[in-house]
Image (tube, rainbow, N blue to C red):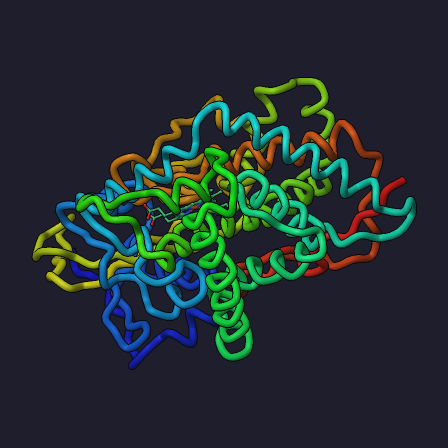
Amino acid sequence: MNLPVEKGFDHTFDLLTEGYRFMQKRFDSSDTKVFETRLLGKKMICMVGRDAVELFYDPARFQRSRAVPKRVQKTLFGENGVQTMDGAAHHARKALFLSLMTEDRISFLHTLTLEQWRVRAQKWTTGQPVILFDEAEEVLCKVACLWAGVPLRESEVAKRAYDLGAMIDALGGVGPRYREGRNARIRTEDWIQSLIEEYRQGTIPHTGSALEAMATHRDENGNLLDSHMAAVELINVIRPIVAVARFVVFGMLALYQFPEEKIKLNHHGEHYMENFVQEVRRYYPFAPFLGAMAKTDFDWKGVQFKKGDTVLIDLYGTNHDPESWTAPDQFRPERFDEETVDMYNFVPQGGGNPATGHRCPGEDVTVTIMKASLSFFVNELDYEVLQGQDLSINMTRLPTLPASRMVIRKN
Ligand code: HEM
């Protein structure tokens, strides 16, 4: 196959202005699932679809070290964390994250999330508008810190939630949005690093928490992580819990856009709720794409990859690929009972096996928080969505949200 090559010197500007649709537009115009372009001054091969995800997650062909741009490490991920590791070192670090996700701790998380929404909603005045996204980031910041054993005073919640949110929001940001994310990361790393140090000095109690796990973890040579690295990894637990606020808002938007879903949730119980949150994660845009670097020269479906080539895999596009999904642009939770769903075609948080590769270790955490949050709104709160707000989703912004951040009011 001849690899379609996009003409022009560099298309970074197009990526930043076209967002989630950048790759899809080019797959459609060349009628392929792979093309070559230039981004950040480098040749990049863009791919979409189940088979491409399977290739992308083959550790014999791709590595992550040197594939994650520094600007993403300085905002979203933190420098030299688990996302940039390969091989045995990655495996050991990943096991640390997965060890936090026991059944007991997930069930504790469900309880915490419900409790924190109840406490928060008590503070809302009947009839007064509340911006759901901002509320969700603060509620989930408290949940994240309680769950991870991170001490947090009530007076600090807004500030810490803002910083954790700003790191996520910096994803496709340039100029002020990027700088805001970088400064938020510096402040957050200082805060969490000092807690790691306090824990090691014995001034924070042992609670079997993520804080304890990161502070006491030893690498393959038996050494403790330095306190900065331990902080980066602990932030890799609390920041993404705050990020779930975006999926909670999308779930609430789905309840509003598809009112029959609320009725089905009331009638069909737990199993339907599971399908509903999975469909929210598939349907709405969040993680756009991922990058990796070819370790060797190889041929795949007639396309030549050279050692050092960077590839980008389109996650949003794969979740909407008509070769994997029937009517992918329809919101239909039932599809999770009817269609073939596997670790390469359903990739809202990356693909492949989380235990052996880079797929997100936080999917159970995400689904649990979504279920607890949505069940609170469906079963416990009488609310309405404010009329006249702009709920449109700007697909050119990475990451995106409904424009109004979803305004509701308690009845
Ligand atoms: C809003 C929900 C979330 C989304 C959209 C999301 C998305 C992702 C994506 C796309 C990746 C990259 C996968 C790859 O590189 O192949 C990832 C990795 C990761 N996620 Fe999540 N995630 C979410 C929630 C969580 C939660 C709740 C946690 C932890 C409590 C978490 C912890 C991590 C970690 C530690 C990694 C790095 C894994 C590795 O490199 O091996 N994420 N996530």
